[in-house]
Length: 282
Ligand SMILES: [Fe+2]
Ligand SMILES: [Fe+2]
Image (cartoon, rainbow, N blue to C red; front, top):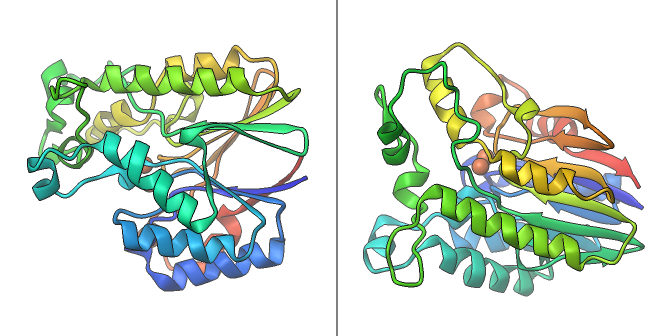
C-alpha cells in the first residue's frame, strides 16, 4: 500500500497556487491513501474546497483536525460557539461532503492496516523549564510580548459551558485516540496526530519566544498511548513547521509539514510540496 502524507498545508494563507501544486504532486505520486495531518484551513469554504480538490486525485483521503481548523471567529465565540462544535460537528460534515475520512471521528481499516488519529492537544508537558515564565503566562498565552493565538480562537467548553483547561482538552482527546486504537482489529496501525506526541520532536532554540511556544507543541501522555500499542508501525504528526524523521522504539515517527509559504525562503510551491509530501510503502 502506498501512503502519502503531509500536514500544515494552511491553504487559507498559502493560497490556490499551493493547493494546485499539492494536487498535481498527489496526482503524480498516485497514493492509495493520502493523509493530511491537520492545519488545512481556517474557514469552512477553503477547508471544503481543499478536501474536494484532493479527493479528486486519491481514492482514500484521511484527515485529522489541526488547531487552525477548529478556530472560531471572536464574534462566534461570543455567541457561544466553541471548538468542540468545529471538531465534532462542522469538520465531520465537511469531510463527509468531500468524501474524506476524519480520523478524529473514528478509525478506519484499509487493506489490513488500521488508521487512528486525533488533533491531540497540549498540556504543558513539553514546556521548557529553563524559561523563567510563570504558569499564568501559559494559561493566558501571553508572555514577553508574545501571544499564543489558540487561546483567543480555540476556546473549549465543558458540558456546563465553563471554559476547559488545556490539560482537560488534551486528556479527552487522548482518551478518544486510545479508544479508536483499541477498536482496530488489524495487526499494523498507523497513528496520525496533529500535535506532537514525543519529546524528541520538539525543536530546541535559545530564542525565549520559541521556548515559550514549545509549551503548546504537544502532549507527552499522548505519546505514551501510542507507544503502548505494539501494533504501531508509523506515527505521523504535524503542528510544528519543522520536520523530523525519527525512530521511536519499534516505529517510525514522521513530521513532514508544508508550513507557511513565507517560511520557504524563495522555494517554489512545487518544490516545497515535493519536499513535504512523503511517500511510504506499507
Ligand atoms: Fe500549522
Ligand atoms: Fe498546528
